[in-house]
Length: 182
Image 1 (cartoon, rainbow, N blue to C red):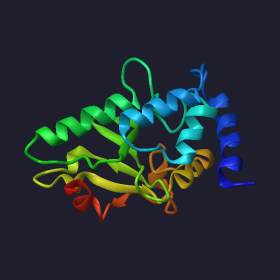
Image 2: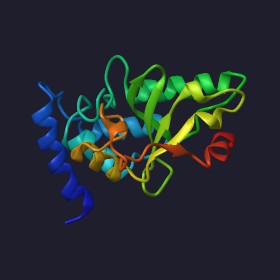
Image 3: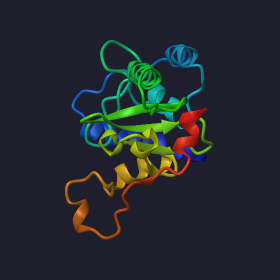
Image 4: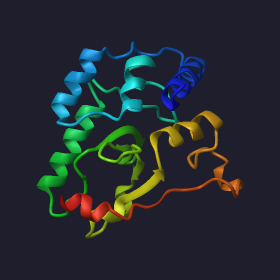
């Protein structure tokens, strides 16, 4: 059994146990349409989550954004951030980094769709001054790892995380500047 085949059923179980109403999953055609709009493929695990679990509405704290649909979605957030980054004095949003969860206050959990492991990043705009790369942190080395912390209840975002020495917080994303410059 692959990591995806093992992880997705556990995510389904937790999503159903922790969310009162999950939206329907996205169809394979809707995921393909989203990828066409984005201009790049979703990492296989992320695509599976949208096709097999639900179109958002579950996950850590504020829950995954819907991939598609009306309102605040992965597609709309990505397009908005890329546009604002390109039009501003300080570029800050790299191509292929897809916001999947809105933490509030402009912060996002985002997946680097150009990395082999689908690194999960934290975008924290309050850390940004004259350098857009200062706003980026590595939250988890892979999407699977990030989801495992949610399943285990060990993420840095949990209320009592500061009381546990073994909870790893985000670290600066060393390649942020080069990725923003691409």
